[in-house]
Image 1: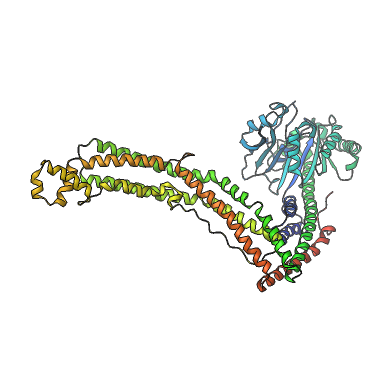
Image 2: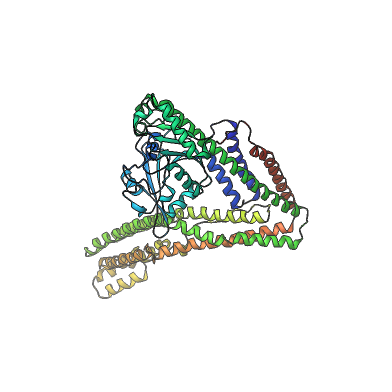
Length: 631
């Protein structure tokens, strides 16, 4: 949670930042250290205020009172929720509802819904025995109580949920700061509190009991003439039922139905009557303070564990650096260490590169496919229009043929440019993912064998302009080849033959006498309809090429060549990683002067980090008096 109690809490936040910087001296920190730091950060930034109690005790009503509106699912006369409901801060004032579901195939899915759909899934009366597989519900909204990072949790009875829900809840709450408020419906369910607390403890949640709320049905029970006696009676009962929490559990007697109708400010209890304002203010202050203090306590404990793990790993790192720089390792030992580093780094690199390609493929192809489809449809419509027009004519003048050719060429050029640009864009996420794989492999290698010289990024690019990368890139050349006969070539052999046949037949013998062959031949050919038939044939052949080359289906040439390029890039990166690491390990094994100097600098940095850890550890073992304390 954010710093709210002065320097001591701020120290935890700074310490977490420092731990991450010290961990970088390991090149790639072990997962156990990363997890410990993450847990400390989670506890520091966020705490859980868990509301629990018997069925129908008023848990949801208490949450509605805290959040100033009907945001939590409630059910009169029925058992409550089938899974936990979490309330956290969001940007919107209106609650947003999200369901987390366990599918029959074992996957977990999230589904946004409205309030009615949320109730249908979360309440036992609509979803008996949780047949819909709800793991949890999440409600986000902008509220002052939630802005500090606090999350409210409406926790169902541990015995009333499925094993999957119980395990999912345990995983979500483990390592976080959980502060418990028990709710009892007057004297009716007070005896249930001990059972509820035992259920929670049996579920292995590390939850600190902060308060017990007695939800009085009758508003007169909290009136000024009865409240003091009622409170004393309830406190005695709680001390008898929960002796282990006698010293640090506050008891409040509240009429929650009236409180739930108050405004958005949790301290605004005008709707509850002035008799309860003081008690409500004190309840909100106590439980939020306890939640914040528990967050600090858990963060300190997690930071202490992380520091111990980190210091041990840095000590091992320092020993290796010392042995390398002072030559206490034989060449054979250095080579063995380099081989182990290579094996460790390469164990997951090829698979990670493949997964990087697979995980970015669908979104990348969607963009390419949309561009291809648009141009394919546009060009085919253009060809259909020209075919219809030409087919309706008896002859086709040269200028019209040239105009048709120009329009088609321009459409093909625009399509090629747009498709190539889309393919280039489609590779952006893949390149970023593959660079991450490369960086991770280098870091993993360096965590086993300290290295000095940096490794540059591999040269990755989507080669959209090469014919083998996509058949669509040759469309312009294909079109030119098909449409070449539409271009005026007065001395072409084809037109010479056609005109010679015409002249031999003496169809227009005068032309042979009066006009130069360079003019007569093409004129005669066009005049006799040869240009019309060639144009129709070219348009139809081009349409077939478009259909084949721009097919976007699984078996289409375009997608196949695009996918082959992506897979080739992933394979090339895996190969490049091995080459880079072999070279890197070789330089470290050789132990040149530059390598020795670099290793010495790393050693000094590790020593400084360990010294700072040693200075910080006593403050975590024995927090100063200014630090907030857990109950």
